[in-house]
Amino acid sequence: MNNPRKLALSLLEDFGITNPQDVDVIDIAYALNIPVRHNQLKGCEGRITHAKNQSMITLNNSEKFITRQRFTIAHEIGHYLMHRKEPINHNDDISSLSWFNNKNNLEILKQESEANEFASELLLPTDQFLICIESQYFSPELIRSVSDRFKVSRTSVIHRFVEHGNHPICVFYTRNNKVHYWRKSEFFKYYIKNITKLPPPGDSVCAEYFNENTIYPNEESKQEISKSTWLEVNNEYANDIFYEFCLVHSSVNLAISVIWED
Ligand SMILES: [Zn+2]
Image (tube, rainbow, N blue to C red; front, side, top):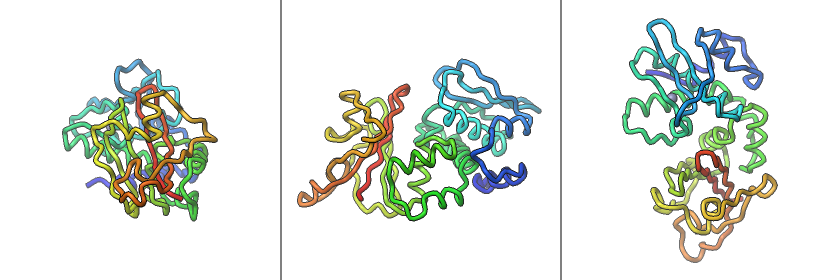
C-alpha cells in the first residue's frame, strides 16, 4: 500500500531539502537516474516510460508555465517511485494532472491520484502549507501568494485549501462548457445543484468565460454572485451574497471556479 505523502517527505529528507520552493525537480529526477527531455507531445503534458533498468520522463515542449512543468515532473517521479514495476506507461494530460480524472480504469485512477498526492506534497509539504494559511480566509490573493512563493500552480493550491483550509469552499471544474466535477471542503454545508455534465449556471462567472470569453484581471478576480447561482437554496436565501473566483486555462478550455462566502 503506497503512502504518497510520506514518500514525498522522506525523499525531501533524503536530499536534505527543507525549502521545497528552492528545489529544481529536474535535479531530483537526474539524481534518481531518470533523464528528462522535452518533445512535442500530442494531447498530453508529460509521460514516463519504463524500460527494464531505465525510465525516462518526457515533457511537452509547448507547456510554458513553469509551475505546470514542475508539477508534471514531480507527478512522473511519483509514478517512478510507486508504479514502475507495473506495466503501465503513463501519458498524463490535463485530466490526470488536475484531480478530475475521467479515465475509466480504476487501477490507473488510483495511480494518478497517488502521483498527484505525491507531487503536491513534494512541492508544498502540508506543514508548510498550514503555516501559510493559518487563520486566513480564502481569497484569490492568498492562493496567488502561496502559488508564487512555492512555485506551484494555483490549481494545486486551491486543492490543498479544499483539504486543509479553515474556510469552507467548493470547487467546480468546467471543460468545454460542461461541468465535469466538483469538490468541497468538509465543512461546506450547502447542497450543490445537480449540474454535472451540464453547462455552468447562466449567472456564474464561469458562464461569462464560456459565453463571452470574459476573464477578469487579478484585482477583480473576486466576483460577487448569488447564493443560488451554484447552490440549491430556499428562495428566502437565494439572493444572499456569495463569491466566485474563476481560474481559466484557455489553452485547454478549462475553467476552475471556487465559490465561498465571507
Ligand atoms: Zn500520471
